[in-house]
Length: 533
Image (cartoon, rainbow, N blue to C red; front, top):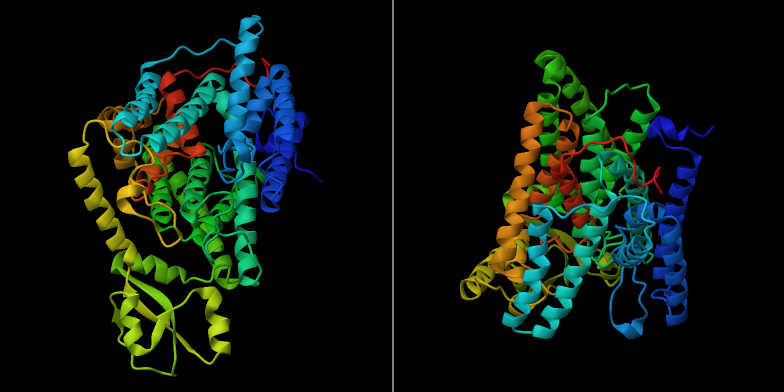
């Protein structure tokens, strides 16, 4: 028997459930078509579907916006015909379509809601794309910088569309099931990728044994799982937990799936970010509920921590018991503190005399050994090689130190305007996959791309988000539950992006729009997305 939708999400009906199912099916279709080579679309199909989407946006802009939120994870799906040499993701495509639909409806005075007035925080964030275009003038490769500035502008449009449709917290609540259902698709695809790799079949991964699902690399998958987990933690913390309630079972399953994806992504900065987000949520929950007395508040927090701990341990047990990753999770976690990494090597003769640790793989040649990938183990053994493991100094530490040193040197010479988005790889080089390296830090990346003005603007916005969240949690007012959500996202993303440059991602700008909704300080029962449209 199907669980009533309003049990999990009060106020939802079967029509909304059909939209959720359509969102899930559309995501699956996009993944399949992309993997079999039917995407990007040809020009005729692209124009046809764009016209259809535009007409649907004129008729039901709110519903199309909900689909837009659901499409945010699909970063590796591209719709624009190859001849245009522009990557257009589904959510960027829908953002453009919705933008023109809103203009048309506003022109004929048929807009069913009032457009939001730009506020100071919108102006602050607008400095980032403006700075991106200004930095083109100081960029070593102005063509690349201009192209990337247009990309930054497109993400600004993503933020603007979210700001238009999120005018109350009830609006945001209507979009959450779409984000969560798409998260489920992403989690399932990531698990399938690893299972396919372990079975010896191709899983469309960019790095063997590390799923990237619908993202260009595994680290972005880890960041997405971190965001989805933070949302679920904040939502669970805002309600009374009952082990017998159907919604508790739903959230438990979702968190297990999120933790499994987080673990198999092997992204240590996302692991740390998830821990910090969970810890901060628990602390904020205690302050939020202190009106009932610290004793009862601590009890509720303890029950929350117990649930999260149980779901994490189940996820960890599943990954270990069913060998869902070919890598050692504990070795991966230990290397964060020890600075040592376990690698697989193949030697020409059995049981060579090897040291306990090496500094780099170049030392292996003197022992008649070489570093191999996991998918090469069976082939090496079949050819009589001796396969074993050895510790080496984690190269990521040295690489990041080198990146930070070079980045600081560049900024000393280009501190005012930066060097434009997309130019840092000219100075840092590429990784083993041939992909250009980035600054490995959100703040440095914005400084390089949008100049000092962009960095200062973003820091003002980011610090204000922290101050707003803490203030409302301490006051325990009617904004406190929303403040817990924003603080969970803020803490997790801050930790993750201290070691990564996960800025130009759709879900990151969606998080910025959610923070901006908090700044609006309006909680209204009016629902501009579903009821008014």
